[in-house]
Length: 205
Image (cartoon, helix red, strand yellow):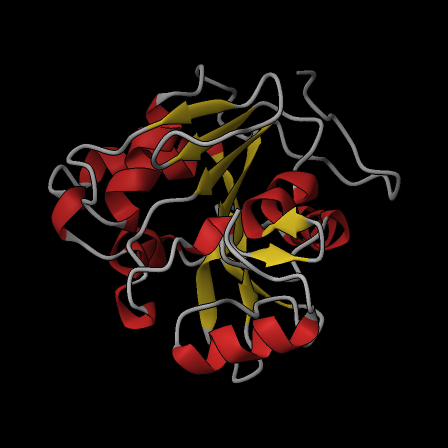
């Protein structure tokens, strides 16, 4: 899969992506969130469409993915998003220090290529993350410079015991306000009801 060198806006594009598609959906009774559907697409499909055209690693259990997308498992399985991020980055070939890597959760209901492009256009020294409607950084909706991302992982050998915020927060990325729905995800029963109400065809694949 070719690397994107630039977006139509002229800003640098991502060279790779890591999509976190594990998690047990404990607060949702064990629902497989990436397999939930909006119309004919799963939430994983939504995330993959947002980063189409660059080498992509999906971290989680085996899933049907487009040709060229690599699926890997975090160690230990179910070890949390920081462990999943580490596994995804480790599965990518080394890149130039300033290359951009997209990191997305696979339960973002409205993430798209335009939002990824907006993040790429705002990346500072280390990265850029989306803000939700309350101004909170969404650590699994961001773009990072390869050197900063891999450096953070090297400095935290016990990353599997830490949160993604603990891992990436010290990098002090540029905060980016996106569309109101850009950070909508599925974490609670209320989120699930909202998603199901958006499409009569919603359901696990």
